[in-house]
Image (cartoon, rainbow, N blue to C red):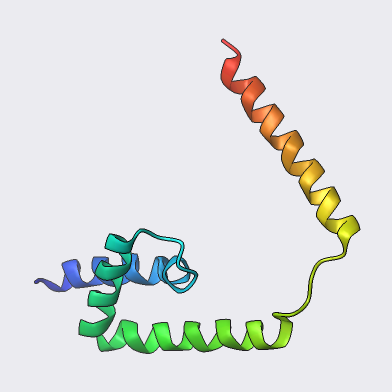
Length: 92
């Protein structure tokens, strides 16, 4: 593999590290990212830092919930965005 291919693989793997950590990608994608991390010490080091930061944030803020008023306002705004998007999709 050339250096350019390795750099591309690294940038892709690191750009998807949070999807990997949060289990938000397909199993096939997880396996590809895990294989890359197993083979690339630079990415594994970077991944370890990201994993530590995520664990720290979860430990410090994991039990907190947003106030119900904030959650309701966000739901309302998201509903408005969905309506606007649907309306724009149907316009000529």
